[in-house]
Image 1 (cartoon, rainbow, N blue to C red):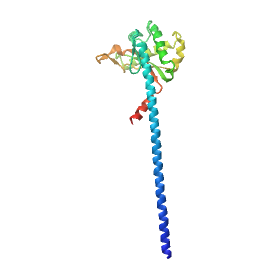
Image 2 (image 1 turned 180 degrees about the vertical axis):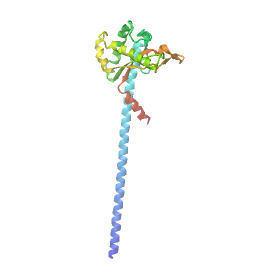
Image 3 (image 1 turned 135 degrees about the vertical axis):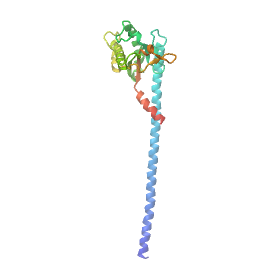
Image 4 (image 1 turned 60 degrees about the vertical axis):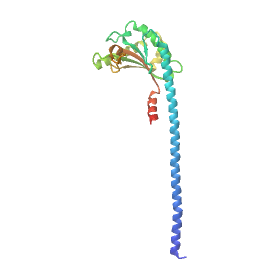
Length: 230
């Protein structure tokens, strides 16, 4: 056979071997991408299921806590309001302070001696304590005066409550150690004012102190909700 034709056939034979090999390589790469995609979808699905279980667990804990607080305080003669959504304990500052003052009234000590142990007995009991990230004492004022003046007043009122609960005068020493690990104090000035039944601003209702709790996984829940929405 002519040498020229032999070279031509050899070249065509080499090309015929090359293209199937290249095609096989592309197929393998494509299959790898498909397998990676499937694996990622499975992992994502498992993560979503885990997030859903976390949400159910945390929401269940909050619901149980709010229910227990309502059962304990809703029919109380102490004049305490329990927020049905958050579990915040709300009472008018007149129970604790004179108008425009941050020093506790003499009769307020008896109120705190009665309220605080009952409140903490629920929050710090077995089954709940591990979920509680913070116990928050929060002061609120009406709109009389400037924002900064009321910010200072609301902070001082919340601090006065915390200072008494952590002082040597507070009779329930066994709960102070738990509080020191979890207690924070905030002043909100008049930013979170309240309204009356008609929806109008109420100065009297806005002057208040709240005891609130924050669960450890609430930040995670917010991120989880965003992921689930996507």
